[in-house]
Image 1 (cartoon, helix red, strand yellow):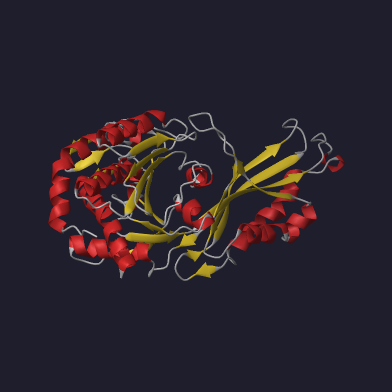
Image 2: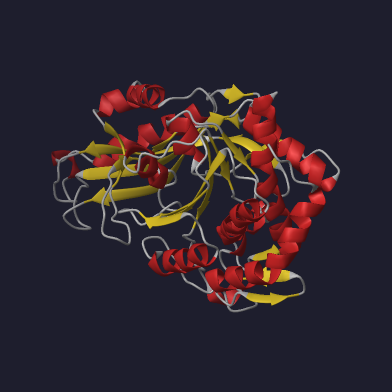
Length: 404
C-alpha cells in the first residue's frame, strides 16, 4: 500500500484549512439540540457532496452517513451532531451560537462537543482520497443524532438496521490530545414504592409510599460504598438523581413514590448484575418495590421511534489492539511524541459500538473535555487541524499493521 509522508498530509490539509474552518463555523451556528438536528445534517450533506464523497445517505433515524472508497477493510469515523442547550445565557461572555473565529479559536456551543471532531473527520476522508490512500479501505463517516439524550442509540440503528459493521471505529469526541480506549458505562433506573391514600389527619388509615422509600434511599447510599473498582476504569457508582411522588392532595398520605437512579458501570458490571443487587436489597424486598430500567422512546427529528433500554455498557479496547496502536503510531509519527493513552470520564457512542456489539473503538478528538457542556465553550483551531491529520493517518497505520 502507498504510505503518505507527514509532509503529504500537511500539504493537503493546508489546501483545505479555509474551507474546514468555514464549515465548522457554520455548523456551530446551527442550534442542533437533541431531536432538532435536521439543519445540521443537511449542512453536513452539502459538505460531503461538495467534497465528492462516493456515497452520501441519510438513514430513517436521521443519521448522515458518508462513504469514501470501496475496499474490503471498513473503518468508521463517528461524531454526533446534537448539542446540549446553553443554559443561563447570562453566564456566556459571547453569543452561544456565534461560531466566531478569533484569537485562534472557534467560539460557540458544540465547537468542542463535538462539531470540531465532525468537521475534521469529514475533511480527513477527502484528504485520504486526494492522496490515493483508499485502495484497500472503505471509510464510513457518520454524523449521528440523539447522542446527548441516548448515547449509542444511533449506532444500534446503524448496525442493526443500516447493516454497517466496521472493523473498528474512531470516536471523535474531545480527548485533550490523548488517545482514549474505554469508558465507564451507565444505566438509568427507577424504583417505585406504592402506598394507600388517606386523609392527612388520619395517616394511620393509609400507607405512606414515601416512608416506604426512605430505607431504600439509605440502602442505596450505602450500596455506593461497596461497588467494585476496576484498575483502569475505576469504581462503579450509584446515586439518586431525582425523586417524585403521587398524592391526591397536600392533605393526603402519598400513595406513590419514585426515585431515579444514575448508575455508572465499571468494567464487568452487567445489566443483570445491577438489577439483582437492587432487587435483593432488604429494603426493596420489604417495600415490595418495583425496580425498572428506564426505556428511551423519544422520536428523532425524522419522527422515528427506536425504543431502547437505558443500558449503556462500559467498554475497553486492549492497548495492543490494532486500532489503538494505529492511533498511537499516527500521533508519534505526526507530532514527534507518543500520546497519553487513557479513558474518557464521560460516555460516548462506544457504549453501543463496542459495549453492545463488540467492535473495537479508539478515541481521538479536538478540544478540552472540560469545555463540554459549559458556558463559553471554545475550540482551539490548531487542535482541529491536528485531529484532521490524525484521522487521515490512523487508517494507514492500521493497514500497515495488518500487513505485517
